Image (tube, rainbow, N blue to C red; front, side, top):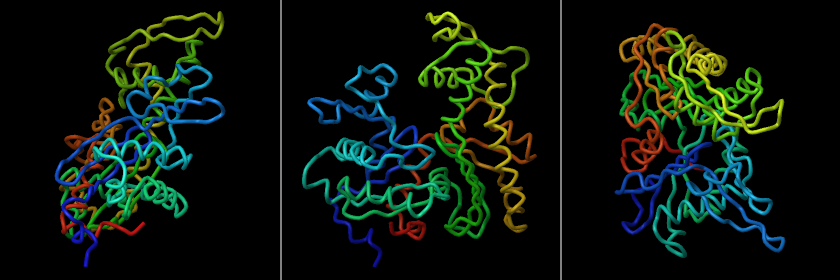
Length: 346
């Protein structure tokens, strides 16, 4: 008997996309109930560290905390970097999503999305964090498969579909068929790497140091995978002048940011081409008809779909609700019997 058929109606069953940048939680029969940054702020008092805030409030503190407060991101490159802190963050997110604390939380059955290339050790860390956070049982689902389900692709059919999931820490390129992954290529390039490249470019070209949050804002406003005609749009950026040491302000253009992002975008394009070269001929024939679907926050980078279409010669579309596709797909896999085969025991 499938474990999901044994769930009582009162059980708080949830699916979690525990992402490097954002954590998204889907609750049974309720849909998306939480979408917040994967950030936790810890306060040290009398030698004891306690959770101060998590999510949106913690992100506002990044780079602006006093000595006794740390704003941390416990996930890097799609996997848990600090299991104890990740566990504390996950507990708070689950309590917020379920709406109750205490004994009821321990009845939660949880599905967690994991990068397909994650190691057994990394998967065990995710399982332990979810179990210690109060889960009665934990099941895992590969992120590209969850993304494809959430994007409405026919993953249960004997038909090849291709999805490119560009997250905060990793980009996964997968070819799927019959509720399984026929081929997957993962590169540790995503939104975080793009932020780093923007900050590095501004430091190198303008002698200005900017923070992580500023780099992210520049990416969201000016980021593009293909250079614009001319300079494109522009925006003011504030930071610290490395020559004088004083606060300073410069103007950067869309063309400059496209240049800064050329390397990570190039790595994503190479991963897509590598996947196409390794795909079985019959699956390739299906991909010619159906094209490539982009999911994840990185899919929203300006002209990313055009860059991939130009390189591959295939039709490319960005999934609707690309940011929450993975969590939506994991939730559907939890609720619908047709997708239960995609879930693996943790």
